[in-house]
Each structure stands twice: as structure tokens, then as C-alpha cells.
Amino acid sequence: MLEAEKKPVHLYMEANPNPNSLKFVANFMLADEGVSFDFPDERSAENAPLAKELFNFAAVERVFIASNFVTVTKKNEVPWEDIQEHIRNHIKEFLSSGKQPIAPQLDQDPLFDENDSETVKKIKGILDEYIRPAVEQDGGAIVFHSFQDGIVKVLLQGACSGCPSSTITLKAGIENLLTGMLEEVKGVEAEGV
Picture 1 (tube, helix red, strand yellow):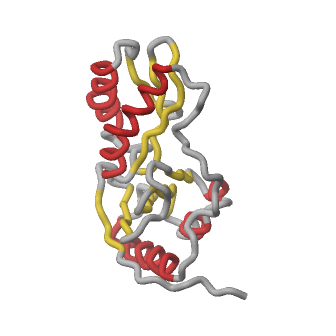
Picture 2 (cartoon, one colour):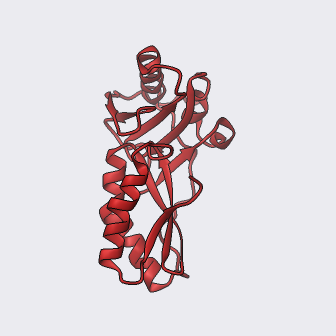
């Protein structure tokens, strides 16, 4: 049986606008650039060994993995001081073992769809170039959902899901940017929030 190669892991924690989420940043990539994985519950983590293990912590409510970080959202009643080192150590041990946090996926650009209209392509491009990096900085992700009748619908993932400031970010930031850059866009809404 082949043993996974151990690698040195440096992991640090970052707070973000969602007080129930904490971002654990690694010194190497965990997922391809622009690709993210959101696990709102243990059942959704079937192909994500790291997320599946993190759900063994009773306080863990949601796990999000993107580029070089894992965002963990905890239950409101549990203080971070009680669990953050345990979670950090578990992530570090998992990554040090050489195991992959996500099972191999099909190699396809999640933004690309040849059937997209020109407007949808422009919306996705703006989301990817201007908005995704800022949202990832806060431990989350924004994913295009749909565009119909001038309204862009997006999915908020990771730390953005359930964050008290996500509505302000959505309206004051994302909506202003998209409506300012594309006359076809009249508004932005979060889907499933």
C-alpha cells in the first residue's frame, strides 16, 4: 500500500467579517484557482475527506475549501477560543499527511459554459476578476447562479453564507459594480439566503 508523502505545512488563522467563521490559510494550494467547494453539512462532504473529518467536531456547522484556505463556520453558541486550536491542529495534521482535501474532480473551468450569452460571459468575467479575489480574502466565495430580466442571482458560500455584512457587500459593492459596468444589469440578489 502506498503511503501519502508527508509535507511541511504552515497554517495560520484569519478572522473575517462573519464572527462564526474562521479562515485557516495554508502555505500551498488546496484547490485550483477560482474553484471552490462549499459543504453546508456532513452529507454534502462525501467527496471531501477533510471536510468530512471536520464535521466530526460537534461545533462545526459548515466547511468551505478554496485556493489555499479552509473556512470553518461554527455553531453560534460555541466560542472560538474553545475550538480554534483543535480545528487548526486537525487541518494541519490532515494536510501534513499528504492526503488530498478534495477527491479528484473533472478538470473543467466552472465559469465556462459555451451556451452563455455575451452578457452572462461579461457578468462572469467581472465576478471572477473584480469580486472573487475580494470575497476570497474574507474566507468566502461568490458564484454566478443566473441572469434574468436584468437581475443577476449569485450564491454566497463559505464565510459569506450567513454573514451579517453579506447584504451590505452584495448591494453596496457587487450590485454597484455590476450595474455601473453593464447597463443590462439592473440588480443583484443572493439565491438561497
